[in-house]
Image (cartoon, rainbow, N blue to C red; front, top):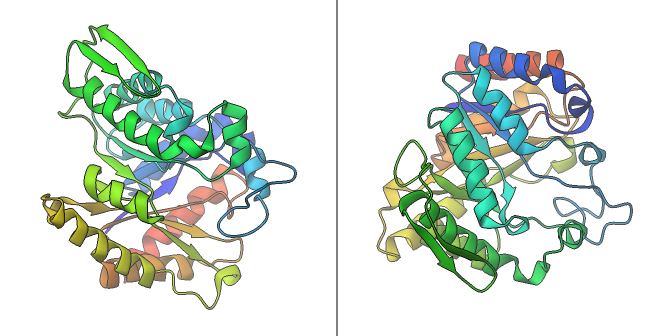
Amino acid sequence: MRIGFTLPQFGDLAHHPQHVTRFAQQAEALGADSLWVGDRLLAPVDPKVGYAGTDVIPPEFRSALDPFALLATAAAVTERVQLGTNVINAPWYAPALLARSLTSVDLLSAGRLLVGLGTGWSPEEYETTGIPMAERGRRLDECLDVLTAWWTENPVEHRGEHWTVPASHIDLKPVGRPGPPVYLGAFAPAALARAARRADGWLPIALVGRKYAGTDPIAPVAQGLAGLRETVEREGRDPARFGAILRVNPDADASVEDIAATITRAEREAGVEHCFVELSYLAKDADQALDLAGRVLESVRAG
């Protein structure tokens, strides 16, 4: 099992950006396999849609550091860990700008980037970025088209429904061809079908802690991954090459034992070989975050 953790990006952790480099270096030294960022823009006062099936926005989302800045920072001070996005809300960005940022991080990290993309869920964030939320699925598809062209062709040219890239010389390419692996966050049927058709893997979520008592965090992951791999095979792709990286999302009451048990079950019952833990709800500063990371690693590896 590969185990990762989120970089200090949201909530109280975001107020100490000077500790990002220390966290990244020490998490790698502890044995973490990956470091992750998300993509939150704002926390509406009166949200039309809440987070994770609730009617509220977590207060941690009121403070958010830029994901690309954090990835570049972590890339500069680490040597081994994979750097992942879970997820970048792709429809917010002009694909050429997104491709430039992702390619830069991949090169800065010597090919350690894993690109996780999604469409988000907040109407207010779409309103703020000036992108119609109803177009998010089509825009994600077009973004994937541009990324593929940007990373595999030269000159690059794209003329689509929403964006145009005039024929252009793009000489900088990612370290590996055909570019970094692209995973998709997906829950709705259309999004799951897109992941099976186009992605290298899936980004499910397991909710852990007292707030989610009475729900099984792993059974839906096992069922979803099995169904996705069947669809991947029907698409004429190799299901054995379709991966999954589980985001373990603990609430403030979750214990290290709860988190470790979820990771262990994910491997045993769902066949997931890579998980990462969201630390924003559990840690107030980098020292707390590193202590939690070390205890999770120790607990999982102790069996």
